[in-house]
Image (cartoon, one colour):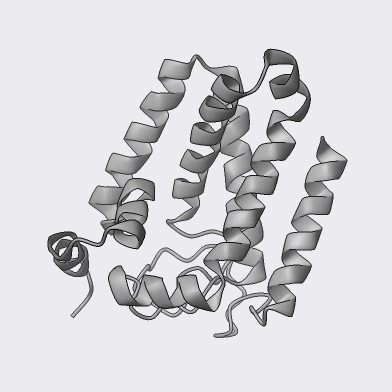
Length: 184
């Protein structure tokens, strides 16, 4: 489980680097955390506010895989499947098509993709969410997602659900509300 996850993380990191994503913040500051979603540092450091949305990914993947897989397969392979799915999302998210879509339809007007470090941090956050979901009842995991989504909506005007909505079926009213949080 750990070995397979490390292989997936390594392959993802190498693939992102081959896609010309920077290893770390192109701005040169080697911080571990960047809290400002409206700056060039967003999605460039190991951790940022969106890290919490990846914890939600882990909670949701654990819930979904628990329901889709047999109990034996879930115990033996669920975690690695979740890591592979999250790594695949990180690769897709950093394609030119998705980056353009983010800039056109979401509050992420100056988004240029994630650094390799940020994508690794995102997958690690998903792993933490998945493992947390293993320790609590499904209802508590769902409650965790709700709390994270509400917290992110209040803090950065975004989250997993808003992100998916704006990528799949953009709503101008939502975009306007999100952009209302931008510094002037």
